[in-house]
Amino acid sequence: MILTRRALVAGGAATLLTGCERVQNWGPTRELLRSGEKLNGGLQRLLIDRNALAPEFRPDQMSPVFRVNGTANPNTPEYNALASGQFADWRLQIGGLVARPLRLSLAQLRSMPYRTQITRHDCVEGWSAIGQWQGPLLGQMLRLAGLRDAARFIVFHCADRIQGHRYYESIDLVDAFHPQTIMAVAMNGRPLDIGHGAPVRLRVERQLGYKHAKYVMGIEAVASLDATGLGKGGFWEDHHDYDWFAGI
Image (cartoon, rainbow, N blue to C red):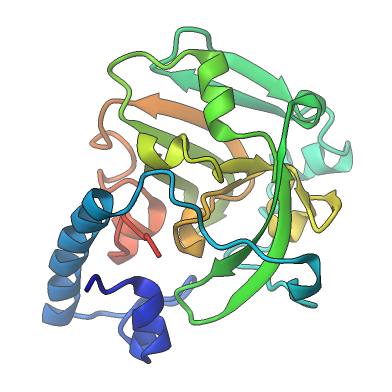
């Protein structure tokens, strides 16, 4: 039996896991969990269909309140200027190991073929909420850019800062091309609001909440995570020992 993070949270182990905004020193327990997570991640990749879908829900099952996870507003001069103009001047840059670097406006993203899905957001703090998300498939955007053969990971560079560091996250190509992995521009039938990551956020539905990067400014294809942050692939992974593979 594979022990998922959802099972850990449900079983009361959330006190051992760092939350979306809390930091704890686990000592030996942390290292044991990290070793187990690496094994678990590999087993899940081997045993679970790469295209297996996360559960989807009916509109009447949507949560009346969907909490804001992580940053509520980047509140930097650059971000505030973009927000004041309804993000008309914002551009999503797609680069790195691609044949055709792209700079996409919000209008262009909204005009692309999109997917609508009602899914559950699971946070390591122990709360969940069901919401509707709408946006183009990340895989479709990467195909437009033309990934080079050397690309192995997709890194997301964001506008928000936590503890003085600009937020960043990464996923592998299995999740990048998953049929439910989208760049969401709308939530619950309305344009994405600032608290939930405007103008665009990642939805990678088979992973925990901290992997769903908000306020995305750039997408970079890389061969290795060694040069991303401190080399573990994400802000929380680098600075607070979160696990890179957050599969649920």
